[in-house]
Length: 93
Image (cartoon, rainbow, N blue to C red; front, top):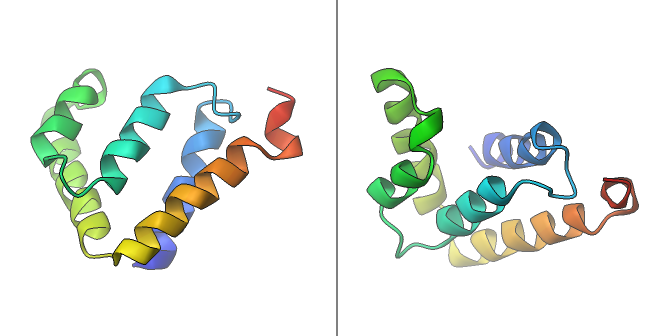
């Protein structure tokens, strides 16, 4: 499950032209890493991208993946995202 989470987080910046260059991506990741943010708050931020109940259920499952992680893992994911954003490859964007 951790591998799936890492792969999704690595793929998201590429979708938004990395660097991050995508404020929605950055906001969503911050919300996913914060245990105090509810799933409905995350869904409201992504409302324009959620089409049908399958998308909503996917967000529920994705959120649960983050809630199942330890605080240390969540902190490391946040650090990984900053390393990606500040990498030489993303600096081009």
